[in-house]
Image (cartoon, rainbow, N blue to C red):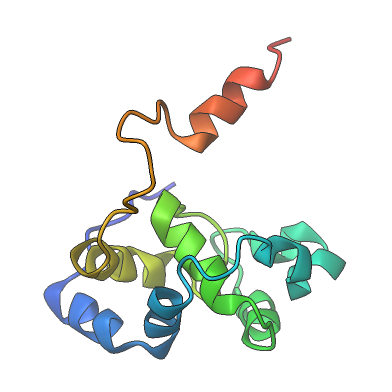
Length: 130
């Protein structure tokens, strides 16, 4: 597996103008129940996690028709998820958007400062090791 590189300045500049990112900023905390209405609910999850050498075109096309695309992308950027297709973006696109997101979006004032480990770490702690 190759290591992801940091996005170049011109990629970050383009990400700041990307309409998908602008929509995500607008819809950031607009809809808490976005997951229940996503187009992805009726599709095999593996569609959104293609192998590194496979194109993500099918997943991106499904996301383009989804009503909750902005909320989905906002969630992925908030948690820093770098795997799979979220909000119609590939991991490479999101890396550049993440730099722009962290510079543009202020932290949630309602969030607790000491929230503990990231969600992924808390979920992994619940999985029994065999």
